[in-house]
Amino acid sequence: MAAAEVNGSSAPAKEEEEPMDVTTTHTENYQTLIDAGLPQKVAESLDNIFQTGGLVAYVDLDERAIDALREFNEEGALTVLQQFKESDLSHVQNKSAFLCGVMKTYRQREKQGSKVQESTKGPDEAKIKALLERTGYTLDVTTGQRKYGGPPPEDVFKGTQPGIGTEVFVGKIPRDLYEDELVPLFESAGAIWDLSNSHVFLLEKRQACSVLQGNKHCVFCL
Image (cartoon, rainbow, N blue to C red; front, top):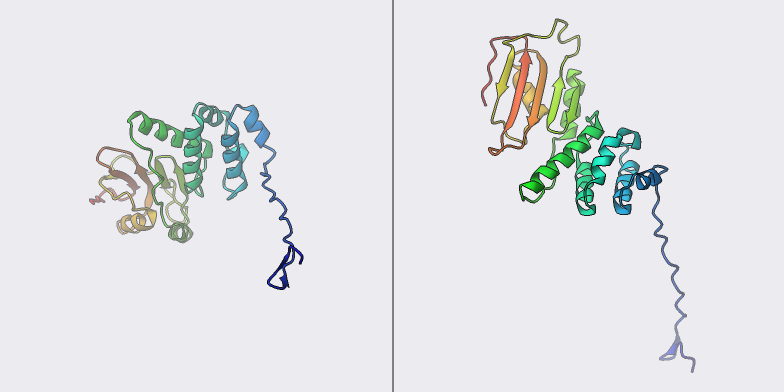
C-alpha cells in the first residue's frame, strides 16, 4: 500500500507553498532620508507617510524638521511619526512646522515624566467641510492653533480689518468644540473677521478662543 493511501483512499501530496513576497516598496526619497541620518525604521515610517493619504510629500518637510527628527531615539521618532500620521492635515499649510510642533510637544511631556498621550479625536471633517462651503471662509491649521478666516470673503466683509475694541476673548471652551459649532454661535452677533481656536496644553486643560468682529458691542461668555 502506498504511503499516501489511508483507509483505502489516496490523498494527493500537498504542494509546497511559495514564500510570500514581503518586499517593502520605497519612494525615490527613501535613500535621501537614509543619507540624512535617519534610522532605517524611521526612514521607512516617514516614507510610508509619503505614500499614503497624499496629504504629505517629501517636499513639504524642510531640513529643520528632518534634523530635529534625527535627534530622537528610534522609539521616540516612531511615536512622533505615528501621531503626525494620525493627525488631520487636510487644513495644515505648513506641514513641516506642524511636525516640529508634534516633536516639541513630545519633548515637553517627556521632560515632565508623563506618558505621551495618543492624539485626541479631532473635529467632524464632513461638518467642517460643509461649513467652509457654506461660508466661503478659509481654515488654516497649525500645531496649537486653528485659524478660521482673517480676512473673510469679500461678499461677507469688504472693509478694513476691525481695530481695537472689536476682539473678544472667550475662555473655558470645551476642547471637543470646533468651528462647526463655534462659528454659528458667533455669527449670531455679526460677521466674523477672524476666529482663532487655540488648543493650548494648560494645567487647567482649557481652550481659548478669540473672535474679531466689526460689531464692537459683541461680548461672548461660555
